[in-house]
Image (cartoon, rainbow, N blue to C red; front, side, top):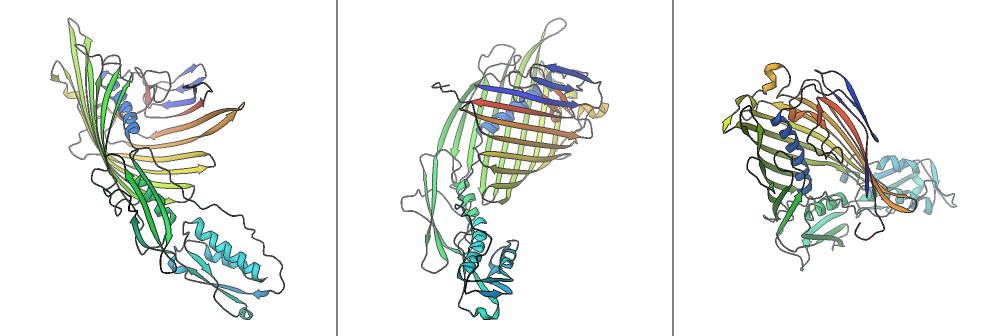
Length: 501
């Protein structure tokens, strides 16, 4: 059972009057457009939202591998001991083997100007060791060589833990390359973050199982990473049936998706999805096709998505019914990188180049003034943060339209009502997690989305609400859109004690 409340939403349009709408448990303050979107624009908005939802559903769920070592509570206060050695300096050797930003020196300074005995020195070494472990260097060590502490100087050595070999178990499958998906390299520092990223890349699919063990090597400070990888099959087939279509082109939609998991032994993914309306009838219908390929390489991910959509509907003419058709094509190339990750957080950068084209026809005659060919790029910064049992995902994206790949001015540009060269900034944040109310298990999700644009936009770039992907219970036949706006959406799920509910 699920309750959804859109607590607030607001739209701005530069060319229109102001109005407001109030509803049950929903508050909206709106300044919508005075002109309703024409047939092609409404279909374009609806299909664009539906395509985004379909691609999100077909994409592999983001893996979240965390191999953190349990933290031990260590007091920062040094014990009073007898005998003890007054220390004026703590010198660290071997720090050049680690990233310069690690706070080893700051931790070491805590032991200066103290009189430390065996327990105090051991506590200082433990604090330095914890810094190594917390940053993923779980096989690196802090050692204290033989020395004369009457000099009031304590010398500690940071011993780097390195990778000797990366290998698979004898029982592992053989159709996989470790070099591309696994960022760890032989001879480099063993970093738990590299192993986490590699495992996420290796187990992207439900047909794959991957695990890892770290075993000591022959030489001190060296370890082997032993991977256990298996794949049950290399292909999958999925079907879907829903009512996300529009009444004019077919409410009920069905489709088939064929997946190839790891086709090139690079932990890559390929899928082809085809769908159409279920109850086809003369004068109306729709069909869509999507082609997708993605390839991980270390902390990078490259992907290509191509989609095609056709629809037909019949509208009333002056003397007879008129057949109205439309078709659209989209191509997107994306490249992303994980910039930073630790035990609880992950920050990434995403870049995209896109091209979109749409054409419309009346009785097989193209409507030239409705032709659209646009292109541009997007740049986004995302952050994922695990906060206890909850997760916070935030993202900021900038979009810039360009005259690339034969892109043409939008029809609205001649009336100064829109541009194919938009400059759009979007902010989004989602907080989700489990919740217990009245001894019953619940889960919640709070979402906020905001769009900012200084210029009038075309329908496909405008901020819209009213579809099922923004407001539950709405069919998307009519939407409200504007150049700028925001909405807040809250969901509460109750896991009922009834079986199958």
